[in-house]
Image 1: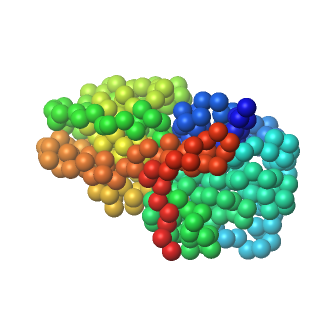
Image 2: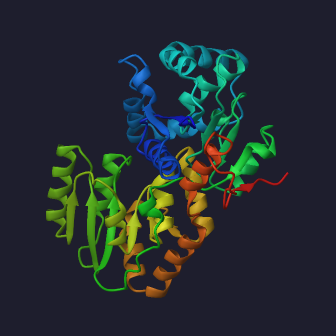
Length: 381
């Protein structure tokens, strides 16, 4: 009897993207091997209760964008030796329960969608305490030194540019695979074509954007423009109530939502999406063929996502968030431009990413077929 493969997928709840990518890969593995034992685990479940990295990250997004941008750039070529040693020691102390779990479990594959578990797992490999291959799924359209660790077997990356960046950091080319960013299968389905009509349907996503900036953006929207808004305000009741009041005061044609269970339906019902440039939401907009307007600053890794969208010709960026209304009105008056942005997004999307990663991870395991992993591109030297 063939032993069922065991795969552990580790994510950090810092933003929703890492969790979503981990879930997409886990579900794709189960679709390929129904007998597989797949554990999608929050790395903070292994850390002390006081270590709220998720809350710290949210605070940094909402109030410390410039600081994060400076830290991101400053650390992109590595930390000085003493500082890096402290970082690894801190990770070792905080995630010692994760290390114990992995040493005892010795799963067939370990997959990390965030640097925190990747640091812990790769250290065990280097110390010869873990015999499982460790893979990293990069969840933004930019590479950073924080993703690079000895002991990592494979990197699954979203683009050729990210592949080249990782290889420049002394990672051998045959360990870097251009797969795209894994998204849910429903997002990967053929896009729904929404005929151009007025008022133009606008999906406005506020997650991770400073609240004052969201309010200022909404306050600048022109109620006379031929636009209808679906505004996703999130789980903060006070913030959502404030946005609802602002919508009424401005006389906007808008519905304000709390957090949605999924974005697929909301994306398919929108002509254009106003959003910050998170790696996952950017990928989902590309896959659904939705034009993007990006009026807010993109700090750290999100700057790489912004460049990807602009390079693909799939979105428009604003120099001032108060220009959002005029940019949207321009798209309402130019159906061809709107259609072009969506089509360019579709062409830039890499479909089947989750399945591609899953098939690669299952290769060579007992009971798995040796069929080709369609669409995996090995980065050129």
